[in-house]
Image (cartoon, rainbow, N blue to C red; front, side, top):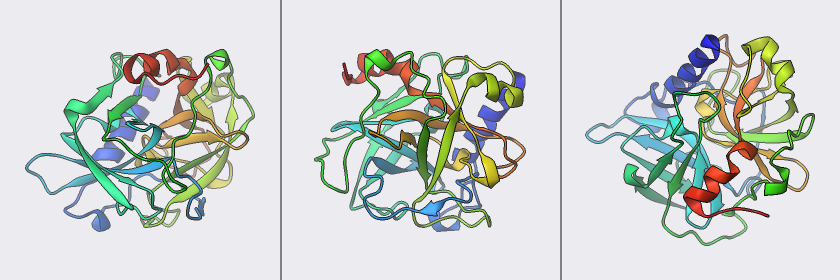
Length: 263
């Protein structure tokens, strides 16, 4: 468990610590590796988050998922800043069709994070967003799926980190990944709580900290099953599993804080 806590810390450092004065000059974050460029409209539910601090020109990169007209779901460790710029409706990083600036009084972090693992999840209350073909929500799992672990289901994760060559991607990158059991994942990270979901990362295909807060969505009948949370301290392309916050475990928390639920 100590190793997992370290990994979560590294994920946070990657999301908010590798900062420079402009977005385009970031040092490479931990990122999606060996994925593919998304076509326009592939993931209308994803938003680009620019994580900002008052009195500073530095900026961190994260991701989030539209789950309602006024709500974005992300990782709790992305919400430790003063405000975020949320960019909607474009595959260009930090350059959406439009954007909203939201201050931290509209952030809701899980009350058990970071003291217990598996609770790296947070909400951003946003101005109203109208849905279009390029800006749209993704459904959450239904309450009757709370015990579904989706093992061996195929999913897609997307984000705006760098690529396998270490260069940041200006264009949204995605990668197809298969969910594994926590028993299998525990061989890499030790005993895992129910709130963590892992995916296999073969052939250097993975997510990492720079994709923090972004979505993991099932291929069939798309639903949001994971929020990008952590990766291996050994690097993105070593073949160790990538870790997500399991959405099914937090359906009641999401309902209580946003009013969004599927029955």
